[in-house]
Structures are given as structure tokens and as C-alpha cells.
Image (cartoon, rainbow, N blue to C red; front, side):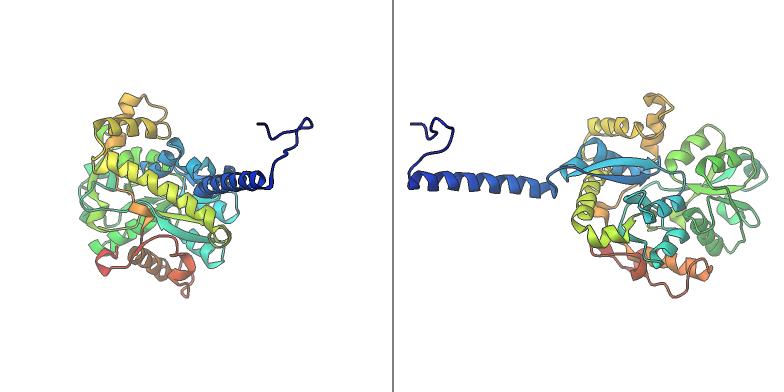
Length: 358
């Protein structure tokens, strides 16, 4: 029997009305639960800063596999060529989240209350082939065949206070040598300078170092992990406003990123996902890296350049403290800045072990 009269209104007994009301309330509860799974009733658009490096693979995977969408986030990528401009973009709210190395610029912006590190991404792992120490052919031919012979040589950096600067300085200290640091602003400019012998040495991720060496453009003379075995290479950061006032959104972003990292590690590092998963991952990453090359040419570089990404975005606080100490020693940032001024450790698991201090 229909409950609608000729005018389209419900007409029912009190018992039937009570049952209908219960059904409606149950439906609304179900809809609410579905939306609470993602955190948003509709996709919220955010911009994420990235570099075209395999170290940013977690972001690429989360975009391509819809992990951000599952969390209610519509991610737009904005690409940079160096770390410090990315930190400025986050501070000015041109970018919502970013993944890059901790730089002097980032620390200074954090000191001003503009940005916060909220997680870790790429780390050196002595068991995994990581960043390489490379030299120009010109320097190699004149005897620069291992890191102990770097004394007095030029070391390429993007900017003063960049991760390239930090790594070079640690090698300098541990080898008891003196380097001449040469800022060249962008990775592309550094590669050009290495090829032409304008600078002697540099450190860079394996997916860039190995193809250059295999092509005969440079020589690899060592591993960064020999000097910094547990170095927290890149961090995940955002504006202080997002970290403090957009906690649900920020946690949603980190959740998606962690899923991307887990997929990448399973396919490319631990090899637990199978050969097809590795092939599919290479194809996915190729959409963002070596896009000017055909897949069959780019694939070996992508595979050989794989480095482990931090599980669940954990942060190596001991490594970050070492980095902050160096920046302060070099007077690149204020002496009274504390690591807590830079890092919001409430989002992810942290490691604070002196054995992993580098």
C-alpha cells in the first residue's frame, strides 16, 4: 500500500512514521561514516611541491594510485629544481606540502614560525645502494680517484646551506680535508659543470649518478653512506598553519604518502611484491622522471636508482639534530634555534638513537 497521497506527501500511521524516521537516520549515519573515512565530503584541492627524483616516488605513487583521493585530497603537483625555493613556497602558502632536504633556508623559516617538518621521507641505508660521490672526468684523470683525495677540490652545491653543502662538509670533516664549495643554483647547472670539468666533485642520488657514469660523463668514487650511514636525506614539511590548524588534512596527506612509500619499497627495494609490481612501478615513475627518454632506456636508471623510503614517514630526529648542529656551527642559522622549533613530532613515529645519529 502506497504511503504517498495524490499530492506526493507521506501519509502513514505513527508506527510507520517512526519506522521511516529510523531508516532515514540510519542512512544518514552510513553516509556520514563514508565521508568520515576520507575526512572530507568532497575532494579538497592542495598543492604539493616535488623534485623529479625517485626520492619523491611516494608522492607520485599516491597520486597515480588514488591514495590522496581516498583521503579526500585532490593533489596538484608543482615541480622545483632545488630545495630552498620549495621551502619559501611552503612558507608563502603557494605550496601546501613538500618533500625535500632540510636546508638552512627551511630552518630559518621554521624559526620565524612559517614552516614545520612533520615527517621523514628518504634515508641513507647502508644495506641499500644510496647517494654517490662523483667527480668530473677531468678531476679523475688528474688522480681524484677516492674521497681522501678531495683536498683543495671544488665541490658543487645548489646553494649555501643545501643538503649538497651539508654532505660535502661532513666528508670534509671526516676525511680531514678542505673543499671549495661552488654554488650553481640548480641540479641541471651542476650536471653541466661536472661534464665540462668546471667543478671537481658532487654528491647525488643514484638514479642521476649511475647513468651519468655509465655514459662516461663522470666517475663514481664513493658512497655517501660510508660517511653518513643513517642520514635523514629528505623531510616532509608544511606551513605552521597547516600543521597546527589543519590537522585532519595534514594527517590525511601523510597517510596517503605512507601508502605510496610502502608500495614503492615493496616493489623496488624489498622485492616482495613480485616482478610485475616492479615493472608497473617503473612505468608509473617514468611518467615523472626521464620523461624525455623511452621507457626501455629509462627503466634501468629508475631501477638502479632506488633508495628506501621511510616506513610510515618516520623521522630520524638524531640525524636532524646533527644537521641543525652543523648549520649552527657554520653560523647559517641562529644559535638558539631548537629542533622543536623546526619539527612538529606529533604526526609520525620518531627515532632518537645515537647509533643512527647521522
